[in-house]
Amino acid sequence: DVKVTQSSRYLVKRTGEKVFLECVQDMDHENMFWYRQDPGLGLRLIYFSYDVKMKEKGDIPEGYSVSREKKERFSLILESASTNQTSMYLCASSPGTSRSEQYFGPGTRLTVT
Amino acid sequence: AQTVTQSQPEMSVQEAETVTLSCTYDTSESDYYLFWYKQPPSRQMILVIRQEAYKQQNATENRFSVNFQKAAKSFSLKISDSQLGDAAMYFCAYTRNAGKSTFGDGTTLTVKP
Image: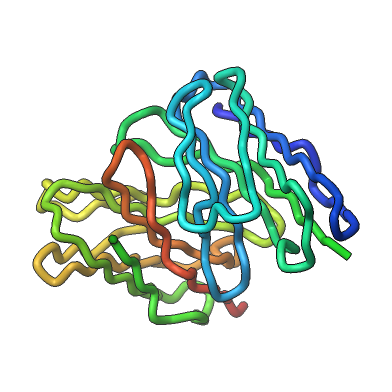
């Protein structure tokens, strides 16, 4: 079974802090994704990576950056957390084909106070 | 840009009955994939069913089936013999480019005993 893990289920940070969310997958998938999930807004893509050190902006990249130094690990960085970044963050991975579904992690609920 | 619309924010169904969740999408492409994902409360999102656009036959997975109308750009999910464990948020997703997906806003399904 594919396993996607995220470093924290719940996280509370203060405004202005630098926040790291980490995601690890164990199935050698090329693609990895970071989404933000908010009520009534579905899943919005923040960043997408299709290979090590390769990244592509999604729909809402402002205020975020990412890092993919190893194939299995994809990190989301909030350079200076703000209260409007309070949300559920979902990581996913998939093989590099459109036919394949995405495999999701359990999510990190981030609260910025 | 592709858009995916789920017009029913909430649906409810009696246990053992049948329910249909709606999804429409907008694309000018002819080759793509459509997915339904299930997100149970506090649990990871998982794939329910997949449909290849080039296939005319509707996909079926046990109690779950789709009604894929390519010309109408419609992709509804039918759940037969609903069970309490079907209660979840359901997301429709369109995939075209190397695994990048566009998700709908989700439909929360309640199953009444």
